[in-house]
Image 1 (tube, rainbow, N blue to C red):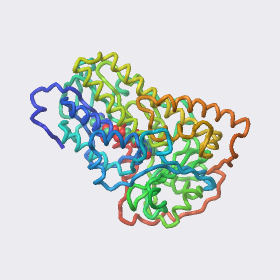
Image 2: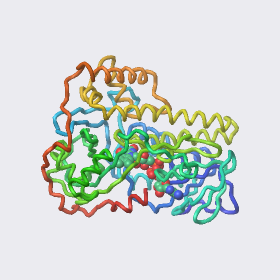
Image 3: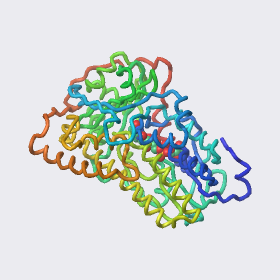
Image 4: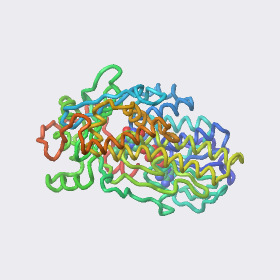
Length: 461
Ligand SMILES: Cc1cc2nc3c(=O)[nH]c(=O)nc-3n(C[C@H](O)[C@H](O)[C@H](O)COP(=O)(O)OP(=O)(O)OC[C@H]3O[C@@H](n4cnc5c(N)ncnc54)[C@H](O)[C@@H]3O)c2cc1C
């Protein structure tokens, strides 16, 4: 796809060059175009394309509404989401949360297939006035300075005033600068195994869109209703555990999901009638940071900046909120309302403060004491409302004070509960120690709607 091609001719200097047309890229493009800026998006894949990451926080939906995208979104097959459900893997303890009960001016969001959402967002960016080149691959960064950036694409050189890297896990600028660093905490080294199924049991009515997150010692499962028939099911495991299971059980990576489902009552209890592809897909080692998140001539947005763990479905919110912030900063820089150095400082602080809070709660999630307190559902001084506020994404550009002090208090409670019991103790659940209940993985998908095979996902994501 190429639009507005007249504007692109003749050695054009764009206000912003955007690498990647995922949520970060298309939202940044649309927000800049709406401000009257000349912006070009270079997306290497043909859309629609499969992408993992289909459940969102209210903080995503709110930004899409601000951009006037709610009607276009509601036309696509999606499932409204008002909360989420958390359980121990043995199925014993469940907690249902509603976003409306947290400290967050929001209550609703949605789950949707990314192929549909990303295609719609990119089309809306084009409709808003952005130039979209697709397929177009950025091959090399030639130079980056404030007001003057040059990049090499498979169709020639492009010049602009600012470069917005929205290339997702490809981290084009991070790799160019050598700043991409994998997560240093070993327990954040994870592998995800996932597929799609039909006929998975789900609650009805207002709760039908709430994802189930099932916890175990070795990681966690997700079950996300994507539309009225299809549910995305996946498991995230510690990389070391996954490696040893593969060896001991003589499994192939694409058989891991079935192995895990069979051992997790909270999940397999909902899949007795499920039909789906017998093999799963794999994404490994997806946690990293590319600091600094902005420098001379460039801003990193979404996964191109950082990614840690998708446990609370935060990735697209980080991307979309970052994209809106950068669009404003770039517009302000170009209009002379702010210096580039100050804009960078503010954006870096936006990303550090918001993702810092998210990362803190992600780290805690792997602590059994946190799980006990969290599953308790309520706590003193409305501390649970602060946790729900974070899970709703009320952290951009930084969490409000009423969340911050309660989160510190919650941190204290987590430490205290380790030593002295504050809430009912929950039994730990381990997949490795659990007996398998086989589900039949050999039934083909009812509608033939298979997601692409492993190699395609890794190459395209
Ligand atoms: C297992 C797992 C589960 C997840 N679940 C969720 C979830 O439930 N909710 C959620 O919000 N997030 C989830 N995420 C995270 C989510 O997928 C990402 O955070 C989100 O896609 C980031 O959007 P983005 O626009 O930054 O990057 P992307 O969506 O990856 O878009 C980047 C785009 O850049 C393009 N590109 C790359 N290199 C080039 C190049 N050289 N030239 C041109 N184009 C290029 C790519 O083709 C791609 O289209 C999950 C992630 C994982 C690993």
